[in-house]
Image 1 (tube, one colour):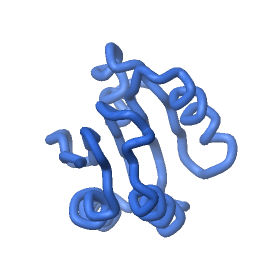
Image 2 (cartoon, rainbow, N blue to C red; image 1 turned 60 degrees about the vertical axis):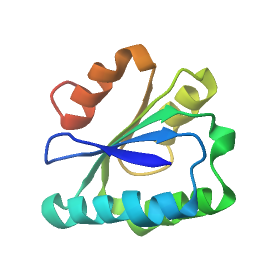
Image 3 (cartoon, rainbow, N blue to C red; image 1 turned 90 degrees about the vertical axis):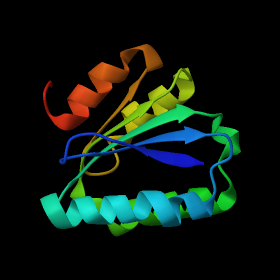
Image 4 (cartoon, rainbow, N blue to C red; image 1 turned 45 degrees about the horizontal axis):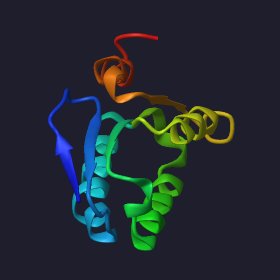
Length: 122
C-alpha cells in the first residue's frame, strides 16, 4: 500500500508499506503526479520505502515504469528513502540515464531528502 505524505505544493511524496500493487499506483501515485505536472510542469518526487522491494507486485512495477516514461521530460528531482544500500546506489545512478536528478537517502536522512526534493538545498 502507498500513502501520500502531506508536503509543500511543489512536490509529491509517498510512503510504501507492506505489499505495493498496481492499484496503489493507479489510485494514489499517478493522479498525484499528474496533478503536480499540471500545476508546475515538472515532477519533484519523494518515496519512502518502509517495505522490501520484493513486496512490489509486477503490476506495480509496470505502472511505475509507465508513469516514468509518460512523464520522461518532466522529472526534476526524485529521492528514494530506504536503508537498502543497493536501492540507494541504483537510484543515484539513475540520473545518468534519464532526465532529472535522482538521489537515494538513508531513512535517518529523511528531512535532508525532503529539503533536497523541495529545492531548498543542492
